[in-house]
Length: 402
Image (tube, rainbow, N blue to C red; front, side):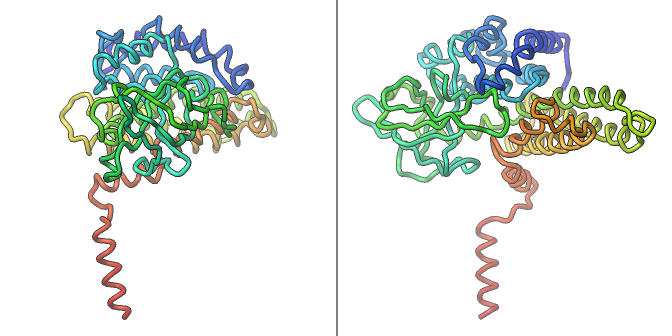
């Protein structure tokens, strides 16, 4: 990815916002278990940071996705994971399908305020029985008059206790699971919505996460995003950007933790020398830095190939899945190793490495677990056994056994 002066200016603006407006309050918001989303998002909207890739006619910058990657990387300087995640839901999960496929009327009503930071929004896909298996969602919307009437529930919804609307994946027919789903913009103040259940998470403490129950919730049919029955496909399309965003967000935070550990171990004395002077320690830190640099290179490569438009969707999906897989695993490796070098101090709840240890564990679970990423990669490589092959082999084995 070619990083231009314009990329760097966006990076600097975002990083300064993180350092001035977010980091001084992180401890407070982590303890409270919620961040003041509307307040923060409005400040970001005023800076133009919430619509980097969104259409200019609705308040965005209209730039290519390489700029969003720089924005995400700069967000990674936040000293917790929950706030960048909440912001990323607004910019890269709840609004991309609306921006691409929504009607002009829907964009004016819902997208423009999200870009301006006048509202907080959520993406509502997962359910208690359908996390990585998106096709397994059960929430159903039936037509009645000019409305959709929605019944069901959604689980692990980021920004869920304070969002103004959610882009929700629901079943709109009884057809095949990949062809019966639609994305609908659901106002969160609609009658029949209960989102009082705030979930108590291991990490990402400053991000409010809700379980949402829907009982006869009426939404105008004009709130449909794009075409009915295309929701699953729309969701799959935007997963690539979501995974790139998440991977980019993780880079700078790991760099910062490594540097903090260098500073700490350089000062900490044991057996007549600093901890850093032990060969294992400084060699291991060098290995960890190399791993993070490798992830950064993969993210930049994937971004360049994505924006070039020269590659198949399958190829981009493979690379984006590699980015997500690698940042999740490297984050686990780095935070675990660094905690060891901090000793007892690293085991304290508010230690930066301990916080990152908790926060980054989600990366290998949310937005598609590691195992899903591996399946996507294997499929692109042509080495994933098909269901038909598996069934034929099992039938042959059964016949031979008989």
